[in-house]
Image 1 (tube, helix red, strand yellow):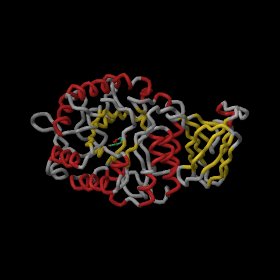
Image 2: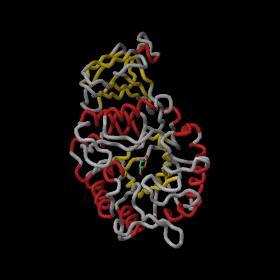
Image 3: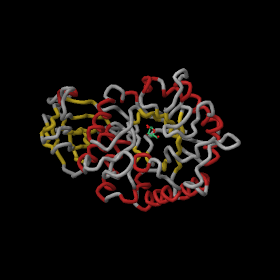
Image 4: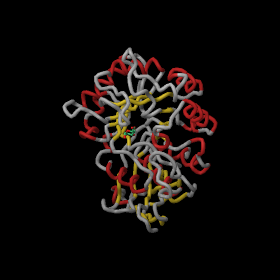
Length: 375
Ligand code: GLA
């Protein structure tokens, strides 16, 4: 199995945490199909922590909580598969999950087989309650081997929050993506902190094994487990989504999809942003301008000779973000210019071979896909 695009889907944690059940997951799968999200590329339905009983069964296996999942996990997986979607689940490298449920430390091969028997296609693997004396590299390597040993194609999503310089060794464990930050919250400052914290790490992300800056808060509207009412509006969601796509991130939606507003659906299915996110080359963006700038402009190569030019205003006041061609080594006398198309408005610019300044509202962004043309 080759994972050569960052995975896309939905995860239960950001909104629902403990309040998960069979009906919620089935309704979410239904909405992913009826809304067009599945057809836009969102394929994984992932149940996070809190789905199990506190104790393992007599055979040592994890037992789904029968009050929450009365039909068991295999039946739910079958339903999700019947919708043309894939089924994701959660465990943890420690001796208990973060919410104190059974976890896979030293039980990797048994648990991997249980997940495979349930029809799981994706495993998020957390890091809480990990013994101080144990080796994290070995723990992730062991679960990766256990998943492969089942013979089932299961995407392995490591989640050790970026600790132990995970970006430097996780690829060798066989994992397909790795959380590189702590948990997101529904605050613009959290979005920016997470994005900026990856500045020197994003270069390690590449097809086969992707950097993961955590699930999306797009459209949460203040509701749920990590929700903060009033702290994010449409502009903040827009910039959050654009930043995640710029960095070629796994796109795991975290809101209640059953009440997603049309504006948010349109943002999450923006074809140009998804094309940027899923670009098969997965090249890191280059920031232009001074590193301390809070109105940065990013340049990123895409496949097919295209590129991204993205302007951000991370400040609380309006202002302009600027592109200086010399920052990326583009000679203005080359006889070529940039032909640009804005991905939200369709506005066309150029060809242009000079300084570009874009006025932006607080927290807003403007993203162009470009091509080189003779001029
Ligand atoms: C950790 C992870 C979160 C979520 C919770 C579940 O905090 O980072 O993404 O999985 O555990 O308890």
